[in-house]
Image (cartoon, rainbow, N blue to C red; front, side, top):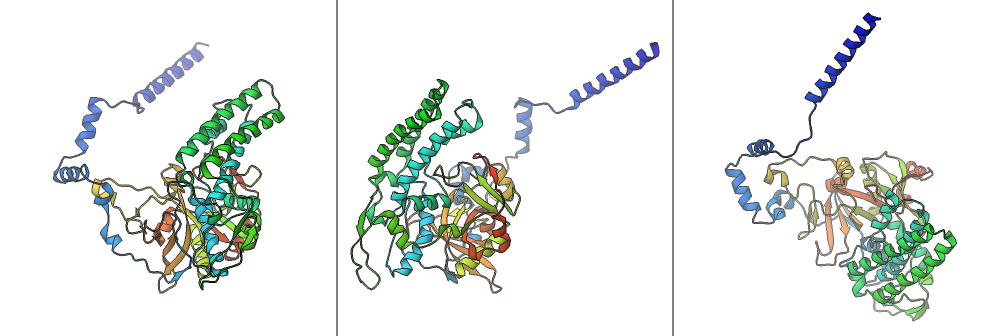
Length: 466
């Protein structure tokens, strides 16, 4: 018994010593003490270069100081294969790039079919219904999560993201099939469609207020039917704000057009749906939505919850693919004169003045003497990079071997931005900062079409790719 006690005592003593060793040798969290600051400061030598860089950078625009002229001078805006279109659109101070881009993908077909000099769909018309539908989606989300605590992650996300003017291709498809389309002349832009910030702020504020009301009604024991009856009243207020801010969407309109030869078509009365069916004549479900996200498994179907505008329409559902495969589909599409919806992290390495997107355009590492080394996967996971802007992919230039060297994007920032409204993107930039591509299924491989038969993995709305 005494021997067992001695063994137990020795064991406990050794264990205590081991724990003390761990505590003593483990790195401890620390504040920026005087000693730590001294260590940091001593690592940065105030040499002649550092002082010169400090004088230059503290008095100038960092982007101008880091502009890599070798990269800039190696580019041009000539393309062997370019899809013809008419005019450059302008989303102005709004986040409606997705809507402009989606309609710009369809626009060349209308221009070619009817031999038009210029043509543009009304973005304001679809935007009106987009905002009303998103308001309904938010309120339905509040009703769905009514029993959850206010600090639940989904509830918190809903209130933070009550409504916005951004979107993706599938939202345009849902709107077109339900509400049709109209030409720009039938519902022109308003000040608040061109400048959405204040209107969006007020709608968000009202929706958040309404969301709290619905949650309180539920707490008091009201049934979902009562909540949805109240929801209709709430949406009437949103409709009123939209009507006053954007104008009234037409139910019927009379329209005619002039072709390139000056021939004038007869006047004809349309509804938005009849106009859409007559002038578009495309099955929008024949387009495949694809993504390049190296942080997720390839050849897998995904969807992102709440990444839609209509309550009863599908979420953004996409096939995740290697970048080289996406480039193959894109090149085939352009050679067949089929433009594509394309979205990317446009702010990275963008030279707006010259209209170029090229890796190495700005050499921050050399100026600061600090490496910036994350790859695409790391940038996604750390929220340093994501899809921020949509444009229409309209052209490709190739080497003697036929490999793509650069690509042409039709932007929606007006003809004054970039190169006559377009951006030229190097093939390497495409690989690093492109995220979403929508192409017709006839340019996509059978292997990818087979992936569409999978049950999609549902991602939460706070996923980096939302």
